[in-house]
Amino acid sequence: MKALVCKEYGPPEKLLIETRPDPVPGPGEVLVNIKAAGINFPDVLLIAGTYQVKVPPPFVPGNEAAGIIGAVGENVTRCKVGDRVIITPPSGGFAEKCVVPEKLALPLPDSMNYEQGAGFTITYATSYHAFRQSTELRPGETVLVLGAAGGVGITAVEIARALGARVIAAASSEEKLQFAREAGADETINYSEVSLRDAVKELTGGKGVDVVYDPVGGELAQMALRSLAWHGRYLVIGFACGDIPNFPANIALLKEASIIGVWWGTWSNHNPGESLQNMMELASMVDDGRLQPRVTETYPLDHYVDAFSTITERRAKGKVVLTFD
Image 1 (spheres, helix red, strand yellow):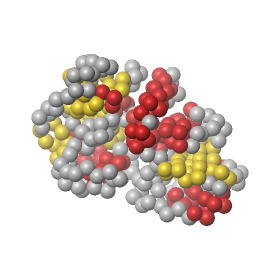
Image 2 (cartoon, one colour):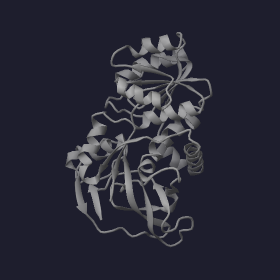
Image 3 (tube, rainbow, N blue to C red):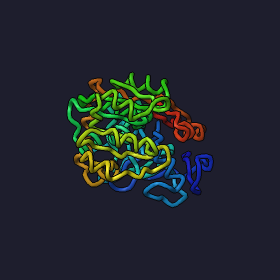
Image 4 (cartoon, helix red, strand yellow):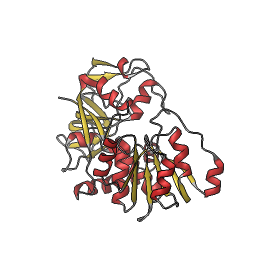
């Protein structure tokens, strides 16, 4: 099989395509013939050696993919050969074949193609967990989404809107904001042209927002924190800009605000039953049209550098996916 291999930490240009032996499923495992695999910002950090969890090289990156089960090991009871599935392996998704425990293979909804399935799990599960378990978002509340056109940001716009919130989408260009409006944003802010804090103040009549969803970090984080309403909640999703913010504790004190870290992968490992329930609810929302997974760019495996560049240069709108013949 072909696989994208990280032999040493560094930028995507240092990755290599190699031919490796096909993996064989063991007891309780399934082998999936990969059709598409989603690229996420943590993949960039992982291959650079700067992610929270380090995987020693050489390894095959990739934490979400979709495909067809090609073989099953002993004691597999739920999956069978020929099933269409979404998988979330610890690594190994950027390859033509991947072996995962059966519990990490979920049915791919009939309403979704492989590309949509490959880009669905991490981004949608992160946003749904953030709004359901991390902050218990209530209908009628106002949510400010930073980086609203990116892979995870656009899912936050969709899900918050589907849960009955008023959504203010913030991004760096009119093109990205139009993308967010198409996903359901009620209001938009171009933070490359206006002050984020001033714009939020105007849009909320001086009250501020109930929830901030921040996958960006950096200097925007300070302005967004100060834009919270009384008892507001700040969701720390990630740091796409590369800079981890230092939050002023006095702002949290004065507003009695909460700063909440959101790491879906760890939460899912600790709460597999709730995580599965979340995925079932998300699949139902896709089936009834409340969510529409947006895959805007697909690249064949050989063009992996171009695919990663879309992420690292922050040009992505929606999901970026690698495809396999």
